[in-house]
Amino acid sequence: MDQPMYSNATAFTPRHDGRVLETRVPPATVLEGPLRRVLRQFGLYPVFQPIVHLADQVIYAHEALIRGPRDTALHSPDALLRAAAAEQLSDEFETACVVTSMRCWGQANSPGRLFVNLSATALTHLLSSRGREAILELINGFGVLPRMLVVEITEHERVDNMDHLAEVVREVRAAGVALALDDFGDGRSSLRLWSQLKPEFVKIDKYFTKDISLHGDKLKTIQALQQIAEIFGTALIAEGIETAQDLRVLRDLGLDYGQGYFLGRPDASPLQALAQTPSSVLAERQIVVFPDMPRSTGNGQLRDFSLVPAPTVSADTTNNELAAIFMSAPELHGVVMLEDDRPVAIINRARFFNEYTKLYYREVWGRRSCAMHANREPRLIERDHSVDELIGILTSQDQRYLTDGFIVTQNGRYLGLGTGDQLVRSVTETRIEAARHANPLTFLPGNIPISQHIERLLKKQATFVACYADLNNFKPFNDYYGYWRGDEMIRLLARIAMEHCDSQRDFLGHVGGDDFFLLFQSPDWRERGERIVAEFDARARALFDEDARAAGGIQAEDRHGVSRFFACTTLSIGAVTIDGSRFSSAEEVANLAAQAKHDAKLACAGLLERSAPVQDCLHRNVQHADQL
Image (cartoon, rainbow, N blue to C red; front, side):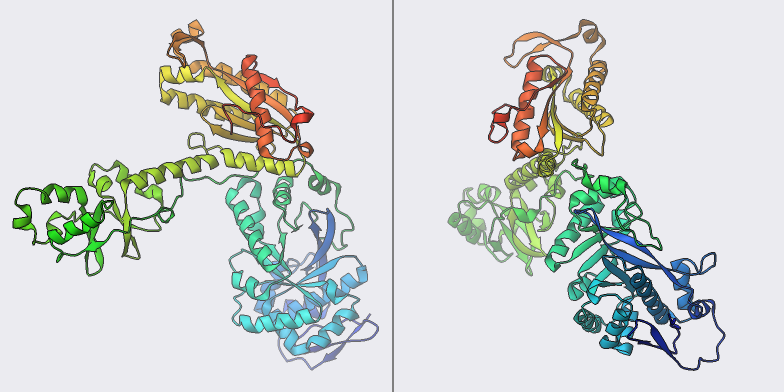
């Protein structure tokens, strides 16, 4: 086969038999650099790395990666790129890479699509210098179908003229070639580029996939990219998959495609079938435990509750006029004083009328300025503040902030008044909502993540064991020793449970109080549960005083106020094996686990397994005191 020479003075002319002729212009009289010599000697060769369709466990495509001559300084891609920049051969080098890759791919006659890398600059230059029809002839000349070719835009520098690039991409698509964006999220990528070009594929930079099983923030980032991809109709490819655990997370996230050493390394021969190890991981019925992000105690916004649209006054407003305002609005607790449209003070209704209703006040002071009653040190709060940032108002020694409330502004302009009552309610609601996501005592997942994990298990139709753990005689202990030691005992149970759970397979959640929920996928779940019970029962005794340990318990009041003896606190766990294909909701699973816990406590058993009756699987709705 005739070999093309790649130089700035070379034009490509594909022939009908698939060979490529050269039209060579006399080269310039310049000293030949090492990369130009490699190009002249046809020293480049490609290796192919598989791209796997994760849901189907099949090889969907290969990416062509270029290499220089073996055992030379120009063997690695980075060295080749540096040499291309130094010798000002970037466009020529990239074109040579694509031509070499297509020629070898056509010779291999492998199934699936071929991804080739081109910078935006090189793609623009290639299309403008050769034209669409010439490029199509070139592709066909190597035996590659245009619809099986994907041009992967690699950004090594900022795209200056995005509109022009969009026109180039339209020409490429008109030729039947698809488009991908490479390394999205590496710092050079652009959301505008994604939006304007609307590529068929976007490859997620390996920073976000490496160790994703350990980093909740990376998981949340990829979930956000999935939402964007759905809007633009783009398929996502996760790069850099190097471990089974990272593959499990990406699989369970529902990523379309994956690429990385764990799925297949680059090789001169395209991979024909996925290896057994990654194939087994993708076929697992189990689900992975997603890494969690640390949560703040609350994230409610001030904008989430209604403001009091209190009227405003100025220093020119008299006391009589202010009294008339209050009389016309009995529900109004205060008004705001403005100076040059800026809120500067609050006048409290109760304190104002305490003075205004005094004998002869109206005759003496009624026509005077109401500014004499103003609190000129109000709390000014911007509307986008977090509710938790306002806790200082509730704990301030200056109680005027509770009675007067606070002034809410937006960009410094007055919006309305917030009251102390509203703030107390909002803080309470925010804390309750936050506890549903992460328990503030143990920082373990709360009710909402527990339910979400159960739903994921059911969706995958996995078999798992749902365990409800509860402490025996905890309330007397907590009442007798105080909540500080009670909290210490709850944290002890959390630590022991975490130590004995497989963090990759088993999910541990804290429902609230002394109630915990465990979702086991480990095959040795029973041994793990029994170790949790035994270790807790032994270590919890250390939280009792010496006399109580010697007596085996404490004398305390029961729920009815009757003093009686309570044994030292122990742990009961109710367990039920769940066939995910037979249940439709997390509530059904939670109800069965709670009933198993109830049975375990009645039987004074550490770990008690309860079977899941067939008739309970679809519509059981067990009522119990400790519902999730």
